Length: 256
Image (cartoon, rainbow, N blue to C red; front, side):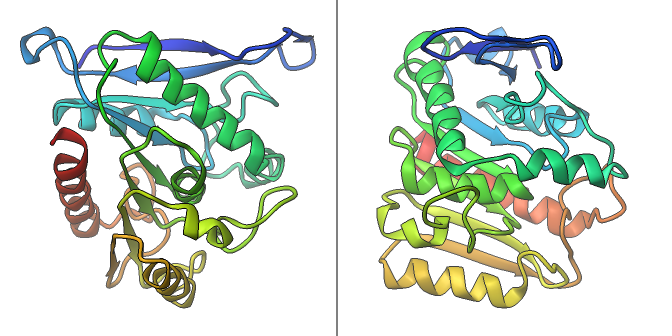
């Protein structure tokens, strides 16, 4: 699949931080799309990274969506601390440091910048519908985006932990559930500790009480990170089924 890195620029004054090398408010974003034989415009999917950044695995996830006929983009959401860190699965102190600096209001801003790029700046996706999918902390951010970002048409949440708590000041994503106007899919493992099966039940019940169209599935024997085939937590059968479900979800609500 054709792919490239795009720098998405934020409005406002630019600042420079010599310590991190960050160039103001540029956000590196991996972009993958179908080849020329598939056409010139495509529906879009925003792929929200795991806690480890836009790693090679997340690039492969984008490429798989591109193979299915979508333009897939993965923004590097740690850009306020580092231009584009790619953390190892054994670097948990660094992961926790970066993740601890995330704030919900800034994450909403980041997603809106990606939506603006897809809707207004990139010819291949202009005028097309946009879905959002996320893994690990990205699942949580996907749920947050579904509550707060206009321009999305469907969401798929993979084992999103901490949906019940805020990042920074303000309400937790679950407390904003009444604002969700798009269908939400959820894929979870019954061996996960964040979110636990009880957490998933709480989220499911909240979506039901608010009348949000959703489809949650709990996979037996799967734990956190079951989709990542670069980690020991990979659970092949669950990952394949969840991808089929997610593609079906997006085919229904994004392609049509």
